[in-house]
Image (cartoon, rainbow, N blue to C red):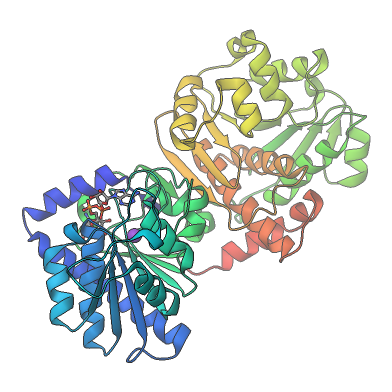
Length: 503
Ligand SMILES: NC(=O)C1=CN([C@@H]2O[C@H](COP(=O)(O)OP(=O)(O)OC[C@H]3O[C@@H](n4cnc5c(N)ncnc54)[C@H](O)[C@@H]3O)[C@@H](O)[C@H]2O)[C@H](O)CC1
Ligand SMILES: [K+]
């Protein structure tokens, strides 16, 4: 599992570390890491380091300081470095002196009320027109983004925004791509699109959430001594090694019952698709047995002969967990199915129509045994019905909902957020949006139900299912749109890939 820490946590860790190590040492370490990454990128994209042109975009804070020091290190490798100071009077003094001493060129740009590069003023520090800054930026082999870091607030100021829009070269972001909200990953205006980001101590929310994850490019975490001081992460990400360790596979002593039998209550005679998809996902996710209960029993049997299918949940037989909801409808028959599942005292993944039913009829909650795990897996619309609009801070909303319902809540989306009632949060950022297709959520329900039946902790069940689901979508799509059936068919290949994956 990889941790993700908030800006406040990082600052607190830095304060503790500074009692042992001078602040400037941390900046050298950070800047040295940035310079190494910049050299790598130059080799990769330009084929050389010495003689290549690097432009540093430098803001008012220590993020700019990191960039300036990195520029000084790069000068020693023969790189031609231009620093564009976006807040010339507040540029990091020691960093600026170091860059100058190393022979770096400095251009100062200040924004005006009307904003933008064209209205920049000159500054005593250098040659200094906004046009000159725009020109060097447009000609750079690599741009180092030191505009803002952890203390970024709101959209980029106009001068920075205008320069960012001119960049065509690969960008190395220092700590995080400027223009992205550090806490939520939200992008509401011009923002740096980094090829690579070098961050310090640990990942921050903007590296893994929403548009921020895309704008960050590849993220390298550099331990400058902070990592030990960071404490409990705010969020976590599952990595392939977690999935490999967690995904249940049969052992020599296992039989079809011992691995956990999953019950599927989904679909209807008129809409059998959900039944087929949820059941199919459960069949592919784990070995053992899947029982289907509902009006689509005949179709399910035709499709998945290995499934034990019955007409009603009451006749389903023994299961260890339920996957309930997709396609059951929001009328009385669906309500009766959900009642049965909630009364059963078994772990359940509650999705789709079952979520709508819960949002319409509060009394359904009373049927639940509070000691038994529940996973709610809404999309944003269902979440809104259940708990109110998600808002910009998805993590905070989902965490509140999980505590409120005393359930694991998995909010689907390009960034899937999975919160446990005790406040733990997992996020899974899909690399592409191929899973945004009808029926894809049904597949996820089946995966979660199967993992619950195998006895996995419900938070881990939901998280592992989300990671596997996104990976199956990528594998199936390979660059072209897919339907949920193709996603479902790719589930075994995705499991195989994780089970073979190296750490
Ligand atoms: N603790 C660590 O991990 C280390 C961090 N380092 C680097 O330091 C920055 C954080 O530095 P800080 O001075 O706190 O803040 P910023 O550089 O992010 O800049 C704040 C500065 O920028 C102005 N500003 C805020 N929002 C905007 C905006 N939208 N547009 C333009 N300007 C903006 C604001 O006025 C402030 O003055 C961290 O990211 C690391 O890169 C260390 O060097 C190593 C240890
Ligand atoms: K930055």
